[in-house]
Structures are given as structure tokens and as C-alpha cells.
Length: 139
Image (cartoon, rainbow, N blue to C red; front, side, top):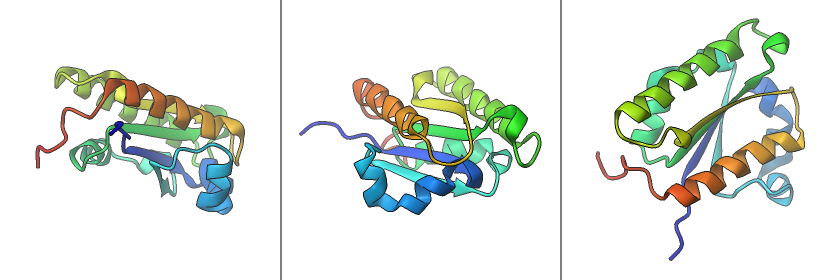
């Protein structure tokens, strides 16, 4: 059986509102991977390093964080804080001997656009090639 990764997507309300409005069927029609789960936040700046690490501990093979463009963040610096925290998790993965490529951060415009689907698809393809997370089964 082919490996299908568990991809967790963390994104602020503004960058995901239209994607969530489309629902699973609409997203699937746009090519959004069925194995990716959207975790919607009021602001990416509220995302904590511990939450991202917990996603891996809970079985995620890859994590995608999406925030507003730095100069368009509704909460001023929220997406920049989220970017720094995703970077910290990248470093932690490397220190733990896991591939840094298992986490990605992207600044995207508000609302639905093809780039939202595309960045998740790219991470999904990359993680599929990497195989299961080395943290699976550690609980």
C-alpha cells in the first residue's frame, strides 16, 4: 500500500476563510489533498511552537503554516511571529535528526487563491517522497 502522509495545515482566519467556505468538496475539486487537514486560527501569531511540535507527536508527517503577507497582516506582526516559530520548529526537527522539509511556512494573500492549494500540494508531494515521520509511534 502506498504511503499517504498526514499533513496538518495551520493558517489564520484571513488566509483560509474562502478555502473553508468552499468546504471539502470544493477544495477537492481545486486539487487540495484529501489527506491534509486545515487547522484554522484567529491569527497565525497565536500559533505556538509547542502546538507545531505536538502535531508531529500526534502523527503528522508534515506541517504547513500559512500566514498573511507581512505588510497585510490584520494583527500587524502575527504572520511574522508565526514565521519565526515555524523556523524554530525547522531547527528543532534538524536537531532531532528529522528532515527540516517536513515543515513549511508561506506568506500568502488573504482569501482563496490557487497558491493556497499549491503550497499544500507541494508539501504533500515532498513529504510523500520523504516517507513517514520518524516520530510516528513514539507515544
